[in-house]
Length: 273
Ligand code: NAI
Image 1 (spheres, protein in one colour):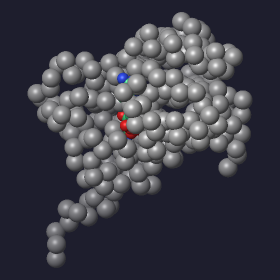
Image 2 (cartoon, rainbow, N blue to C red):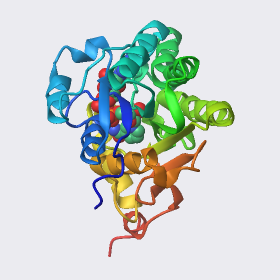
Image 3 (cartoon, rainbow, N blue to C red):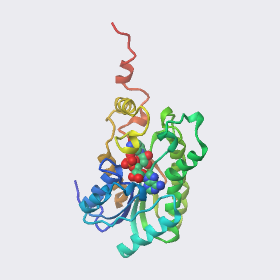
Image 4 (cartoon, helix red, strand yellow):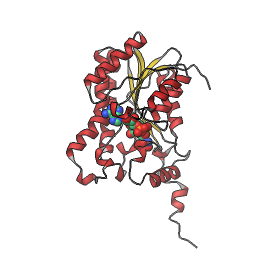
């Protein structure tokens, strides 16, 4: 594989919690392709300190804490990143999701509405805030690329995904709407990557995750896409090879989204003889 797809590019990566995180793997792959990176996560997520191991692995990347629901924190983040890079950034990865209702096992029909606000703010509106702050500060270079991670529960019901499904729908809508305005004004492109279920801290928080991942595996002609493959896909979207891709929801799921049923799954319903 080429190793200079992101040569000279500079980016901000949100959401690297530990070495399972999609953001963690994306930071490693982006660095391997020549990018310089600033890492960020919520201040509470930094207590474990693992992000500093990642920072060291990618050539001493700065780590700037920011709660992605805080416009103030996001402003300080973009200002800090531009100061560090000596100019604008080329790419941003939004790899953030959290639902108190899902975490606490609340049934979708009986959610706590204050927690729903938190789910939407953290998992979707944070993308709007990130983009609005970046645009005001003119922090992203022309033809720059923003990628946010999403899940197919935005289009189809997966009962245990709860109010995260609503957050993902909003996230994908913000991607289209902001993608239009940022595209017209600054030629910045914005896409979501709709990833297969992946073993991470956020992923494993969904009830029945092991069954879910096995079902998805058996419904995907290529099998589930893993976190590393997702990182590579994000790198391709940060690169100049995908310049005219914007406002899209891009499935990275081994074919799951276009499979009605697989032979393997139908076989489970065959009468035993
Ligand atoms: P993860 O748990 O490693 O990452 C989630 C990140 O969100 C954490 O780093 C956490 O600190 C951060 N976060 C939470 N609240 C925040 C806040 N207020 N401000 C800033 N950051 C905050 O899990 P994973 O799976 O890598 O999640 C990344 C993204 O991928 C999420 O959007 C998730 O919904 C999405 N995704 C995950 C799938 C999976 O099965 N793991 C499948 C499809 C999409």
